[in-house]
Image (tube, rainbow, N blue to C red; front, side):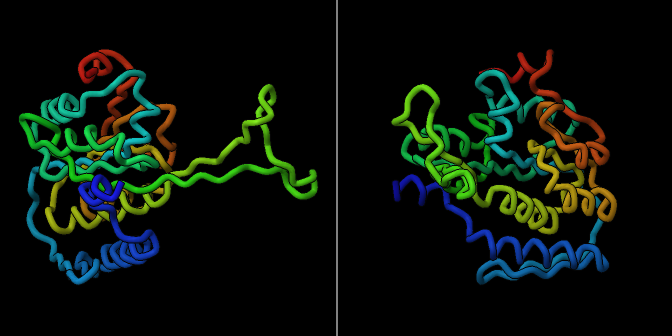
Length: 239
């Protein structure tokens, strides 16, 4: 698994990303100049003129839950560029995987640059699994399957994706100065960095996903929501 994980270039630990994100947001709110440290590199931004380009950020797990079929990310990229009459400058894909070798081929295809692929920069995190037990007040016994007592239920969580996406989104904006943000994610935790980009930096937000999966905290900032589970878009991006 080391080879596949190395190819995907896993991101730094969530606590470092969180610290960098907080610093970025504070700097953005304080006047438009950003200095945030990520590893050995220091990024500095001074507000400049607008550049009509797109930043695309995808939470793979969110899209998987939102789209009813197998999605073609190259087609999605092409639809976005056509609908917005613009080009994608940077595209990031975030996901969690407990078995990278199985995902190696899929991940490789995601990194192919246009016109052969969607041209994503991959950020792969690990899934964590935890056996579920009843609270001690209820006995503390394992939570078992009702018809097969040999199966204990597990809590499966993706770690670091939300923090990583928010961090790289802010970092990308201050490096590349795109003016349109296409966000394929729906978690309400993104609303503060999104609010900052929309209200303080005049970025236009476009959300992609299923309406039922997009937080009401994000919706007010969007110029448009691309509902990938509804026609005609659903058929246009099918693999």
